[in-house]
Amino acid sequence: MTFKTKESRLLLVLGSFFVANAILSE
Image 1: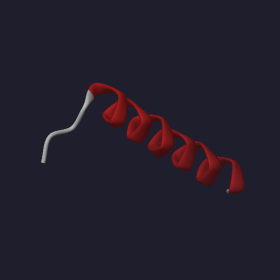
Image 2: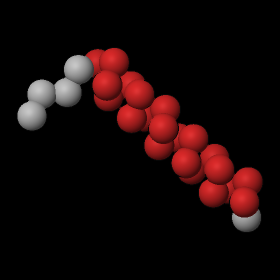
Image 3: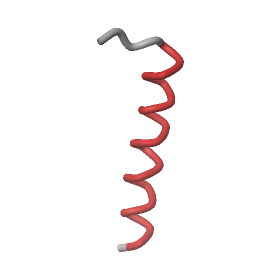
């Protein structure tokens, strides 16, 4: 599997958003 820079960046953004959402929920 080859990851493009844009795809990996999108995954990082989604991941950070999930973490931020979890912190806000707590």
